[in-house]
Image (cartoon, rainbow, N blue to C red; front, side, top):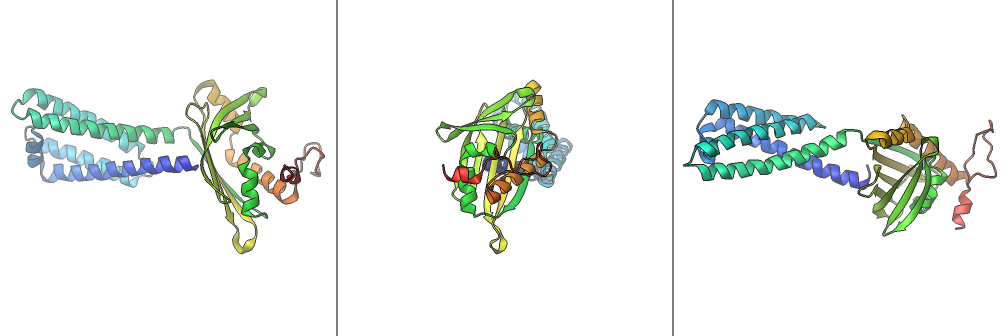
Amino acid sequence: MANNREHSNGNGEKLARGLGWFSIGLGLTQLLAPRTLSRLIGVRERPLLMRAIGLRELAAGLGILNDRKPVGWLWARVAGDAMDLSLLGVALSSNQDTRNRVAAATVAVAGVTALDLRCSQRFSTTAQGTIHVERSITINRSPEELYTFWHDFQRLPTFMNHLKAVEPSGDNRTHWVARGPAGTDVEWDAEVTNDEPNHLIAWRSVEGADVDNAGLVRFEPAPAGRGTVVKVQLDYRPPAGALGAKVAKLFGEAPEKQIHVDLHRFKQLMETGEIARTKGQPAGRPTSNSPRFDDFVRR
């Protein structure tokens, strides 16, 4: 969602597709020319075994290319690589005449194994525990006004219920404090990763943060000049253990609903100048403590 996530996921998908096509190419070679390939890498000719390995490669390649989340297929490649390295190890110790060719093949397979392992770990990390939220709303204000307001991160807690404070900490970074259960706080540092005036702001938590998260907000002119479409994307991955349970409880069971509420509060603040609070007021009348848009404009 956030710019960092899009970039990271894009690179991971390209690597996975590259490995998928590599599997198909290698598998076809093993099926169609098993003896030639055996002589090339210096191992004993075993056409049936080579073709079986080729079928495995083809299956993995097709699985990777046709599955949107090919985690299992990628790990299957890692397992196949381990098998190939074992077979090459046997050949390396038993065949003195072709040792150099077998050693070269072993180095090549080890390199591919490293790529397979890296890609598998990346997709596994993305698939486990990451929560992705996307919401949008149309606000009767210009992109410039909305961008200017949001760009001051210190203002976000005025309409985001889970945030307690966002303070600048230098070097294009900010320190975030969120409300946790039982009066506790969850904190992390973040940095802006992309900033396109009046159009887009993206940020992400810095390395080592307790809460791995990223966000992106776009401001796009609505059709027929009817204000601005604000699109928000959020990704976060609660850590394991007690802190993870705290973070999960912090964001609730329905993060989409929470962001939906926050955006409606943002819309209300930007369009009417204040956020009506309903606690203790069934009619939803604004209170004197409600934040006003004019207060921020005068800053």
